[in-house]
Amino acid sequence: MTEKQSAAITVKVQTEDFSQEMIYRQLAATPYCGAIVTFVGLVRDHPELELKALELEHYPGMTERCLFSIAEQAVQRFSLNAVHIVHRVGYLTPEQQIVMVGVAAGHRLAAFAGAEFIMDYLKNQVPIWKKQHDASGTLWVEAKTSDQQQYDRWSKC
Image (tube, rainbow, N blue to C red):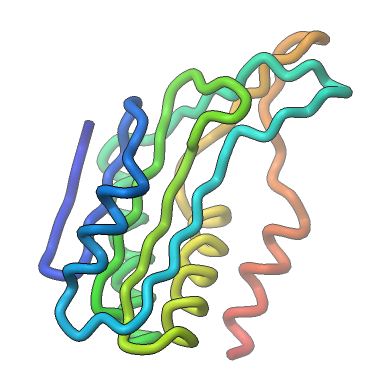
């Protein structure tokens, strides 16, 4: 596991699973916290593909720096009090947790917007690659146009 932390930001990239409850408790202990928003992404089961697993690879060091930078941007843009991002890498099977983004803020609107901003940037800017293992073989997962559109809308705000 690699980790980078500041007073308001925790970023982890790891192979092992994570505890949503533990992360929530850490966020709830943040001073002046009035709202917490969390998002957890799972390996989605694709019955038509007979998905066996996703294999996630990353660029160590650079991945953490990118995640930390995104969190810093979100803290500044939405006045967040705390951000916790954990992203798993390695071989993950359907229904396993991949990513969790949790934010603590003084108010709900900032928390919702901050979490959404982080996920949209994460999907487009962080050097993490997915290889899909299914009944027909193995292939690298291409970036989705919809993810790019979600990312692009933040430049208009």
